[in-house]
Picture 1 (tube, rainbow, N blue to C red):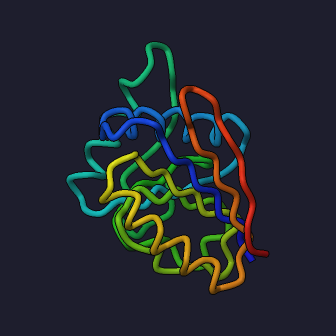
Picture 2: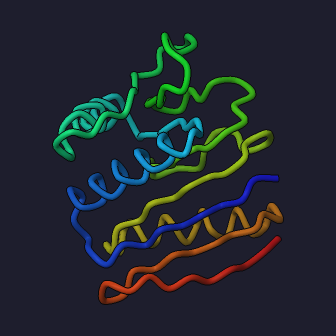
Picture 3: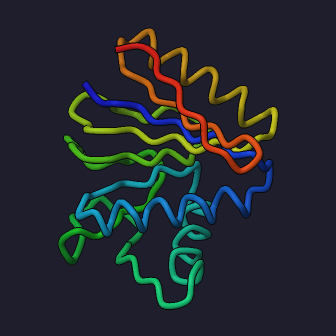
Length: 154
C-alpha cells in the first residue's frame, strides 16, 4: 500500500505551487527515484515541462511528456494527464485536481496543495478517500515559514 504525502503551502499562488513542485521533483530525481507527475491536462503538463527547464539556473531534471511509451532514457521524470503508465510502482506527484487513476502498486503519492479554498477543498476530498482506502497519510503544512507534520491512517 502506498504512503500518501500532502504538502500544504502557505501561499495560494499557482506560480509558487509550481516552483515548489519543481524543487520537489528535482529532489526526487536527485535521490535516484522515479516519478510520474499527474496533471489535469496537456496545457498544465506543458507548463510544468517548461518550468522544469527554467525554475533554477544550473538545475537539470531529465523529463519528458508521457506519450504511452517508455522514456528514452532511464530515470526520466514523466509528465502527463491521466494516462499513468500501467503498473507504475514508484512515485506519483499529483498536481491534478482529481485522484490518480491507480494507486495499487504505487510506492508513494505526493499531493501539493496551495492555500486557496478550491485547492484545499479538493485536497480534503482526496485525503478522505485515501483514509477510507486505509492508506497512511503524512501531511506537511507550511505555517509562517515553519513546516508542521501530522500523520493519520495506516
